[in-house]
Image (cartoon, rainbow, N blue to C red; front, side, top):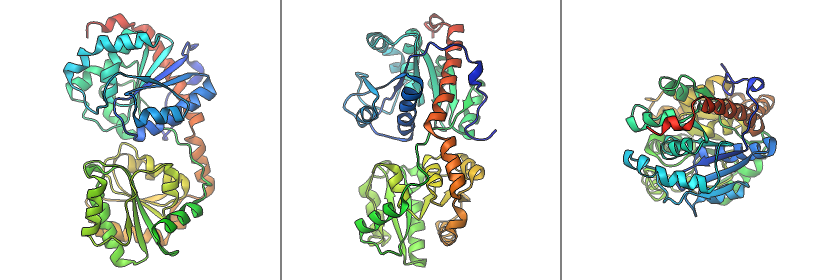
Length: 400
């Protein structure tokens, strides 16, 4: 089954009473799941006349971005956190249930959880309040962890974002379906202007070959590998320049800059940190190097392919699914030395027009993944989940 398609028949869903969708988040910073939400929610509002809110800690970047996109913001009355524990999952059920009732969230509302911690925190209170709960599995989580498993029955519907995440969760939820995240991208985005702006900002020459990184600096994404490949590229082609867009992770931006200095890349590498819009960052590149070996899907890869930026990515999980389905780049083995990745990067740079997708295919892909199409499929998934909720009412969960 091709990506973006799933066994949901919009025409057979029952008459929906859904009026509102609430997206709970527990952290403070923006990641791929938030970007996907801020693409989906406006489409649900415009195309399906639904009210959409984000439930999150107050005074966070998530809250301000939600407001920027026209979503309502419901303060969760909790401090930002990326962690749960089994005790707090249950200790705060009554307080969270009271909050949902205070906000008048009831049976016409869907709670769309984009990560397992949000499901653990809000799934049971939502079921007790009569809401429909949908869990969207974005990560290659260790779902065997008992508190994770205990929360899965609270979801009336489960969605996976890729083949690899679907495979991971189907053992526990055979009813899970695959639905790719939405992408609001113009395949005709002005790459020349974006590139010109980047070259001018860092004083790089017109013939520079810009190789980029997109992502926060988590060890699993292998920023050190990127820099080792960059050093090898710089030794072999003096035109190469390197830019890394992202936030602190296991490494801070300052630590990444220290590594740049230690590798002698000071004059050819820039670490501007996190910037928006993402398409401007990607459009400025001549090549995207994505060395993470186990990405659940790989949002930056899809965005680069739609924009016509060729990609070199480490094979595995979402990266392999993307490149094998659509093309637009080359895959490397996870154990390939950084010098080998550098050789492949040079080859792709030399054949960029042949590696990147032609405009007509990029246009087709942008339509397939557009928020409008995605919102229609999501609406059908919500309706099916609502049907399942009605078949198993909330009181059955009070004993969990």
